[in-house]
Image (cartoon, rainbow over all chains, first blue to last red; front, side):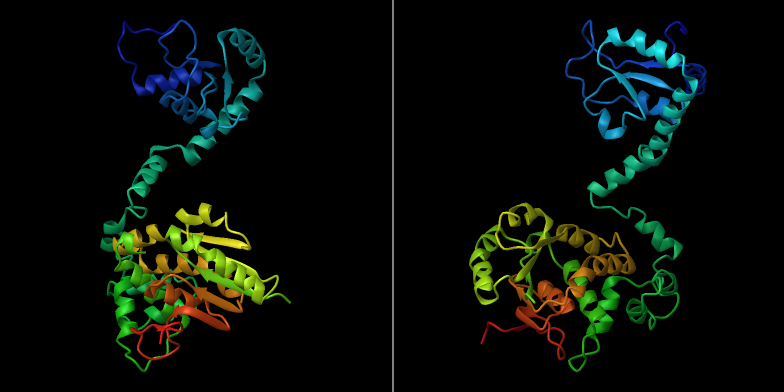
Amino acid sequence: VLQLNGARIDTDTCMKVFNATAINLNVHSTTGASLDPQADFVNPRTFELAACGAFQLVDSRSQLPDFFTDREMLSFRNFDEVPGLVGRWLGDPAARQAMAAAARARVLGAHTYVHRMRDLLGHIGLSQPDRVGAVLRGDRQQESLLARCAGDAPLESLLKDFPAGQRVELKDVAARIRSKGSTATLKREELMVLMLDEYRSETRDLL
Amino acid sequence: MSKEVLLINITRMGDLVQMGTLLQRLQHEWPGAAVDLVVDQRFAPIAKLLPHLRHIIDYDFHRLVDESRAQTKDVVTLYREMTGWAAPLIEARYDRVVNLTFNRRSGLLASYVGAKEIRGIAAPKDGDVAFITHGWRI
């Protein structure tokens, strides 16, 4: 048993403990004598252990399948199962390593703070949160936009007449189309830009 | 070969419910016609209750308003996402587009998709881009 007289264990030490342990027993907090009968949330330790590539045995949670498959995470429903599971998995280091590696890959691919922040910003309408950074880097200048057209000739035709170095937004492309006046024949790509620009100038309740 | 029709009815619950008559009328005129519907994703569950629809093609138009207004996406990203979504509509080569949404945006979408015949608001093939034709008005 690792104890430091109630002091917090720093992150580096935690990682060493996690990785030096064949089977980490991850039990969520509960106020009763047994496991929470309505266990729902998944604690941060589940993700931290997985991110370390450490093998863990976690008490079953209703939200656990939202984050990990049963090939990535081993769980139990009551304490009576634990001795048998520990005995079985202690004897199979290769299987432990495979499951821990799968859990780690899942965390790095889907459950980091970067993923959560992207989700959070997306929910408040900032799905491209680096807008200011993109402008400062010149990502919205004509030549940068042209480079990202990926061979889309109609799209390139809409941008090519803007001067290099000029920041070009949707409203600028739409204004250029409108400036052609009443004798212009609208191309399909121009219809698309005008439609997008109509949405830009609208409010939500007037769809 | 059966006819193919696209209906544009982006939002408003009442408009969707009242579309039942049109769906019946289309089947009377063109028996077996394949009828698709463009609708905002919030109304897609309601649209699925309607009969005689082949595909319900939804899009998050609310998000489009946010993303274009706040410039959270650049013009290339916006354009490519929207054209990617609309590509199957063009490829379908509809015999008729019926646009039931009464605004300029839907009219531009109707013309963008294109069809042998467009009923309802559409952008003119040429002329003043600020003008929207409407075959049902005098």
